[in-house]
Image (tube, rainbow, N blue to C red; front, side, top):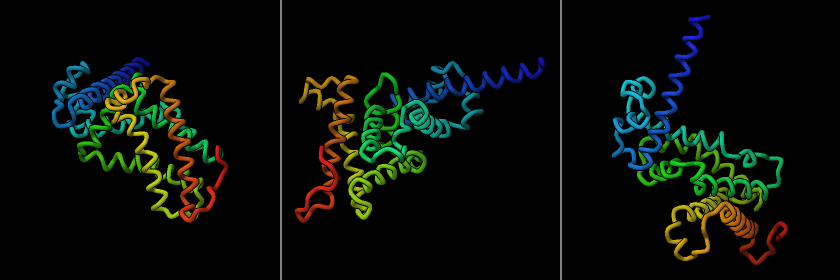
Length: 228
């Protein structure tokens, strides 16, 4: 019993050290980027040793890749994204859930902390981790969104056209994050409160629904689906 208890305590302590390293590394990498961040600064903030980094992650690059994956797993586990994949809901509701979750991930920094900035840095200055991020996390969500678009526009909608439409939806969501310094100067009433975020998500959803329903109407036909 005593030996089992000691082993359990050791495993728990190692897990705690690993979590502290991931959180501290997330903060440092988000602040300074991969290239300027130092392992020494990370272990100082985590209250750990350089040996702990070698033990859990091998090196700085291994730590960075795991931090990127850790950030995305956090979104999947903590954020309420289950509605995004609920095929039983109408496509319109799945689009609304997708947009709402996307906006909250980017804009609700009180909950998500360093994660949006870290991921934004990786997209702006890609490292070897970007391919992993795209294949494990971004592509599945993008394919989900493309499927929603095709269901709304008609399953005979060409794939490339549906993909461009999905990119347009994502672009609107990203704009309110990346363009925030300009937006709040142009629209001072927009404070990015929870209420504002809900309103922005609904605006983007309604705007995109109208566009999607007109995808097949280049020849002057009436939009498909009910207008609201």
